[in-house]
Length: 158
Image 1 (cartoon, helix red, strand yellow):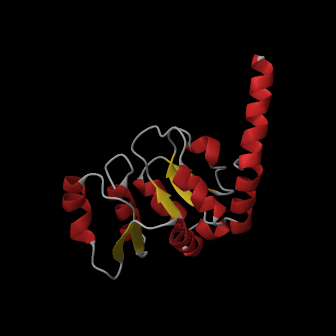
Image 2 (cartoon, rainbow, N blue to C red):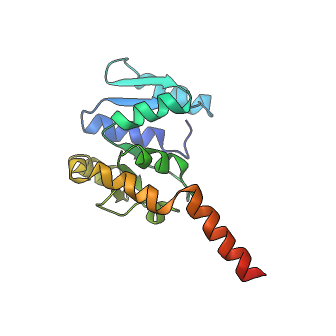
Image 3 (tube, rainbow, N blue to C red):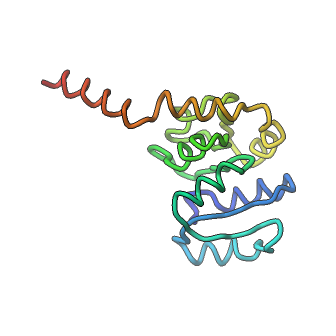
């Protein structure tokens, strides 16, 4: 939880949509958390559950309406985006960094430019086929595919 990950913006999106917001993860910037996040935690609509392991993460992501990913920097990959789609959960992300490489707009999530656009897409999230989210990861982000492509690159270098 820090400014770069867009926690404040994710809160704004969820609150504007009157959606429950479950926040999970490590607090990396305590001043940011205390100023922008903690005042909104009410244990009813906005809940902070801390950090936990992969089993609980998968259960939580698998039941989520969507993962909000309003990043504030040009993220080079986005592991949480892949983890979400692996669970069949679509992603609403700011169109920055690697997000266009991970998200097929309108198919496994939505790419947006600001909080207002994100709020609009929350109402459309049911258009996304959750099984497609999972298939997208299986086609593009498996260990076997990574190994195959590394071998191809090594072959070209040799």
